[in-house]
Length: 196
Image 1 (cartoon, rainbow, N blue to C red):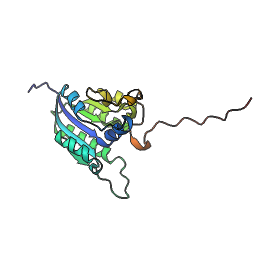
Image 2 (image 1 turned 45 degrees about the vertical axis):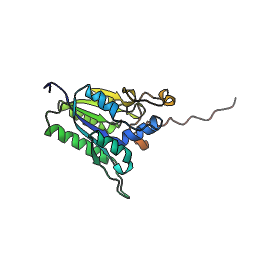
Image 3 (image 1 turned 60 degrees about the horizontal axis):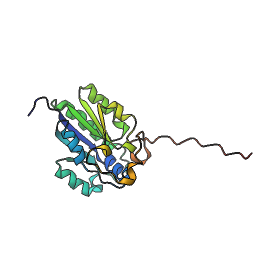
């Protein structure tokens, strides 16, 4: 093995990616292979983790385990608000890994959520390279410039977006999280038109 080869840790905010692919890319299922191929060109992926409530992603779970991804369960609790549970767990795990495994040179943070911008900044401060990955229509405008490199999932080789959704791909700038959190503000109401 080349001693200069990048050692990569991959962290997937899976709910963000899977729901984003379904909603923004014409019902597509998220496929890890195009991302894995792109990362293989950049180094050796030594850690693969995906965060979600896996009871909602049964088929995805099978696909990820065949690709040697460790599934981190973030369960939904009845009547409890789960706000940011996956985000917090993912951020804590990334920082812990940064300190425990100094040989990891690159962290890949797969999400469009701007809540991860402080994590990206801290990893870079700790002398780690950070690659972000997200969907163009749902990635916060704050996240790509914070990273050393940012890859839009639908632009990766091997991702085949249905034809009717190719032209509707926006330029990013969305809130990066489903369900309205972080969404851009609505346009101010327009005054009623006056008849002349």
